[in-house]
Length: 251
Image (cartoon, rainbow, N blue to C red; front, side, top):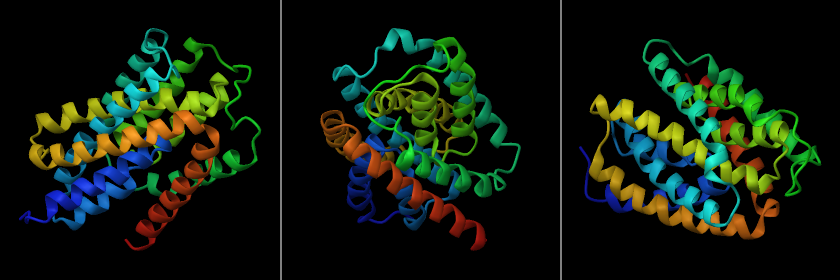
C-alpha cells in the first residue's frame, strides 16, 4: 500500500534520476530501487519506471535537439530499427529469463569505462565513421532489443556505438542516444500499459521530477560537453556494474 510520503519522495528521486539519465544514462539505477522500497510489485516497478523515464528522456531529447546536437529526419531509419528491436526484446523477455545477462552486462560496462577513460575518441571531436547510417541500423536494433529485453546500461551502449561506429563526438552521441532511449521507452510503455502494469498517478509525479532533472542535466551537458559527460559516464557505469554484480551474488 502506497503511503503519503511516497509521492513527494519519489518525485524528488525522479529529479535526481532525470539529471543523471540526461547526462550519462542509468537513471533507472536510482528509480528502480526506490520503487521497490516503496513496496510496488515487480511488474508495477518496471512499468511505472518506464513511464516516468520516458517523460524525462523526452525533455532531454527536446533540449538536445534544440541545441542542434542532432537532426530528426536523418535519424528516422535508426529510430525505426531501435523500435523494432525494442518491441521484439520486450515481447521475448515475457517468455525467457534474463538472469544470465546480469553476468555479461557488468563485463560490457567495465569495457565502456576503460574505453571512456583511455580512448581519444571519447571527446567532443567528430571522427571518421566506420559504418554508414544504413550500416548502423543492425547495431541500433541490437541495442534496442537489449533495452526491451533487459535494460541496464542501454544508454551507455547507444552512446558507445555512436562514438565508435558513427564517429560522433561524445556530446552529439549523447543527444542522439536520448532519441533512441525515448523510442525504446515508449515501446516498452505500450506493452506494459496493455498489461495494466503502470501506476499512472505515481508515474506522473515522478515524470514531473524527471523532466525537471532532465532539463537541468541536458542544459549542463550541451554547454559543458565531454568534460561533464565523460566522468559521469564512468561513474554511472561503475555504479551499475557494482549493483549488478552484488545482485547476482546476493541471489
